[in-house]
Length: 390
Image (cartoon, rainbow, N blue to C red):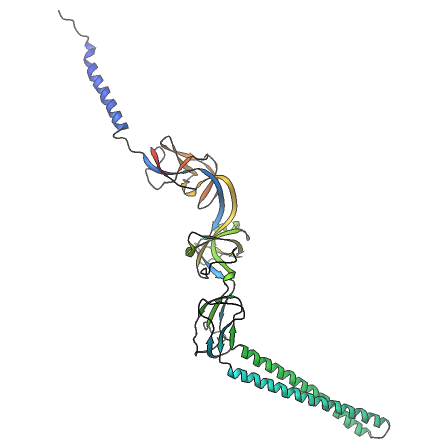
């Protein structure tokens, strides 16, 4: 008689099969079907300098403190142009000359008139002196009762008349001298000279062309445009939200599209006393900053666009991260043991480049900066595929 097998052993083999199947599924999920780690770029937290800055809301413009749009003070025919676009000139250098033959003739005529006036004054002086002597003699004779009172009155009147004529003649000398100065001043206007050291931006006339100064109320473009390249500054608008933080004298960093990769040091020299309201949605205040360098590149000229970065505060040797690595709510993503972990941090100074971290991070911690993909989220598996330098 055969031994009867226990009734519960019939399901041992199926159970073992199920266990093996479950283990296989888990193994497959952990190996073949597991999602690949998300590739991320990180920044190793370091220490360095962080600045609190204010930047312009729209592009600024390079301008010059001294710029002269020049035309002759008198009408005339252009006989010589001594400069061209780009010419560097010194104060007093000749820029342009007009035909001055008529004005020279007027100066010569005024000189002759002055000579005539001086000669007339000299003659009048002699006559006045002679009349005064005769008057004194007549007075002495009248006191001795040699001549009559009538004769004394005649001589006295003649002395007074000649003295007045002498005074009038001397006044005519002054008048002639003034006329000569006017003629010389007019002659000087036929030659345009540089009022300061500078660079010629434009020349808009030609030899042989007749030019005239602008009459009152009518604008006529200047014939020579001159600027002083040493007195350059940048004028730019700052958003009204930053107005209360600005301080004249603050250091400034200036960048220009024409000089990529280079910045120019300077200082904030002016802040407007009012906010411009021409655009209700974008109210700004005008500020100016001067270059610290006294010798600027020759091609750094007025009209170039420029940006200002006004430095309000600086902290050195502080823990910092790139500003674009900061998430909403002052949080960052860290890579810890292959997983992305969200961590809250406390921040201090901040600008477009770096943000100071006062608590929550330690040096060399890997902060994720490649945040532009939806799969880069807390809890995801990740691996470092690149690092950014400070």
